[in-house]
Image 1 (cartoon, rainbow, N blue to C red):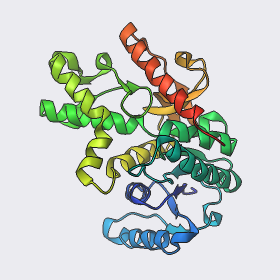
Image 2: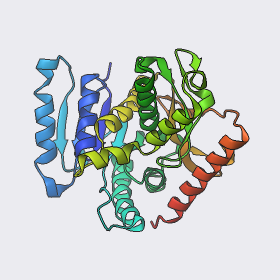
Image 3: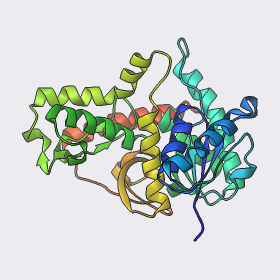
Length: 311
């Protein structure tokens, strides 16, 4: 049986940690790619990780590269490339810079791995997944943005902390874009099958939702010189595993929606069925008026981001 092949573009904290998670799960062979200006860095990180395999007992071939040649015929490509927003940098400047980066990455992947499923992690996520789709020419089901799994993981973590229960017993769902206007759905959140609204008082639940929405900013504030990478990488690899193993997981992803939720042709966070071909189904759930209003606000923000993209 042929082993799956995973390419991770961007060998920084998120990319290298994703390689670590993927290798430990034996999801396949891994190519860690970065730009020629950092020659030696992806190779060094890949070799270091490879040398841990006898200790941890995983079988995966791991190489680093500053060209796309070794990535040929990858099954899944994870795109983490891009810069973080720096002090004094406008949102438009960040979008312009990362648009150029993600565009080049997507074009290269389309040449070397035309049948791959691409998972985009680069920020601003809701705009960059759109860029990757346009630049690659891939069908929409094979371009997916990672955000919902991470946002849900943060939400579930804080709920488990509040209840003093296992994170495994907390189930949650959210919709919309990545960030402050994501839409956690209280009615679809439970712990041990018990509706969360029966376990946590409304005011306290609202505080937890607010913390989940600003979870990334909280970590940036604590680190001061960086941003989150363990949880984003783990969330991305969960998506990759669902695709590689054809697990048919229902996960919140930035998927292309047209008629769904009346979104009209944008990548927005929705519950999606992930399998070998990427997004195999999008689930539309009933929303009450308040939830629909919050979702529309989030969709409008995604549309604003995409309008800022110049390709």
